Length: 114
Image 1 (tube, rainbow, N blue to C red):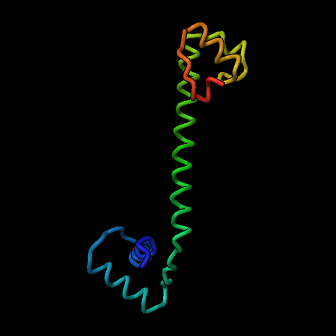
Image 2: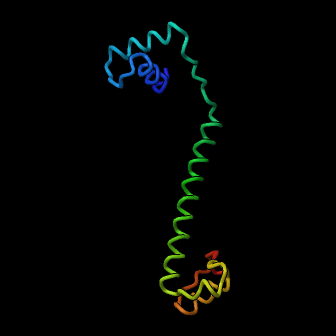
Image 3: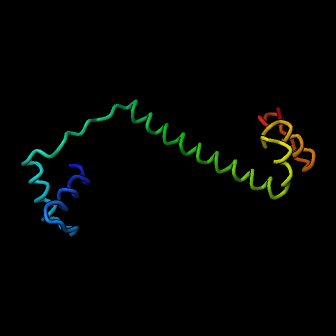
């Protein structure tokens, strides 16, 4: 039984949001008697894994936007004129300017060092 459907049927029955086990049992029994239920389809393993991957991708995308916003904020605080000179703050020219002015270390395997 879908809890949301039980709640809707319970509220439609007497128009009160009160909750009790006796009332829930009565509503569920009445729904089964009248055929207001659906069978649960079991999802395949591939779909469950895909659902997890989608949630992970959304989380990573959210964190990426957050980090980009933090970078933009700090660059605006430290170098407010940099945005007027460079359109993209993560471009090679902008990163080279930041590296020279801040004396940032370069790492050999970093994608930003290329």
